[in-house]
Length: 266
Image (cartoon, rainbow, N blue to C red; front, side):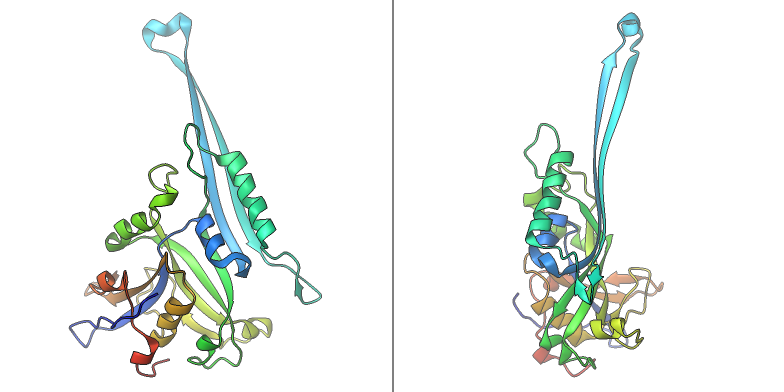
């Protein structure tokens, strides 16, 4: 993705928090972007059909019989281990099998749109020295957890545009949601039950005091998020103690700052 200047709030007393985000919650999109790096995943989707039949003996009274059928698929995946090695990676074959089942069971009637599942949460394991360089981490492997939140007003249309080819909202009935980054944890600290390895932490829109180091947020946006969906969301805390996107989101939708242009805030 391209690099740009960060937008700073006009009032220097206002803190701005940068949160990496994916302007999608499509299972197909995250499979394409992260593949076997996904180590935890929750997603769901359903298809409802209703058949209505007028009852002949009562047709003049507009009495009809309705039968509703619902097909539903859910995923609650977490990578397992045997002898210290991953036992159930989300390989290309596994991903294909999952999507084949989605196609077979949730394909909308009378349309050629590919069915999809809505991702509610996922964790991606990333190995990148560039993240280690700007954190106190002793290793370069990190687990990034994204959670689905309602898209803010200013990113609803951009979210729709970036997913237009998937027909998520016009045909599949998806709600307009983004996968916002809620946590970055050094993997080794999880394995050794250490509590000091979380370098980014946000609990969602109700959390008005995120811990989102700017250099780390920017570098994740530059080097981890896919160009097609990645964006750096600039949040500020409004007077009523509500977290909201700043005007800088308009710039962030197309460009974002380079890590080199930022001071060493960790």
